[in-house]
Amino acid sequence: MRSNIFRALVVLILCGSVFLTDAQVPMKPLTARELIALVSGGALSEDISHEIESRGLVFRSSDSYHEQIVSAGADTTVLTALKNAKISSKC
Image (cartoon, rainbow, N blue to C red; front, side, top):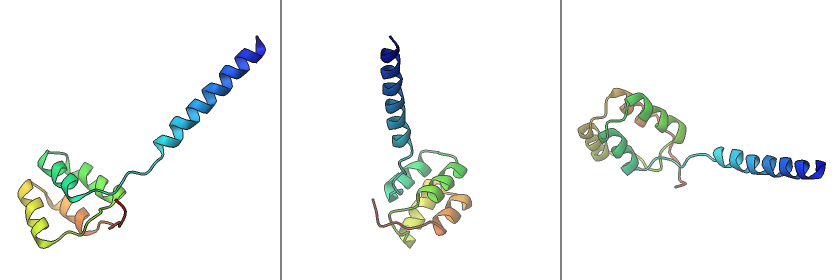
């Protein structure tokens, strides 16, 4: 009886640790399409800014992209985050 409880406890601990390690996997950097989708989809500027700051970008913003994102509805909060974003080469 005691060994069954011990086995069940060990299994629960192992399963729990698998889920916890998966939850700590860092998010991939934002692509240009994802960022445009967030802006045009009406996400809050503060949330978009946080995503840019925490995840970084996988692209460099050009003048034409800047025009597109402004047309999609980006405000100064998003544009500032875009200007200061960390650029990653990993996708």
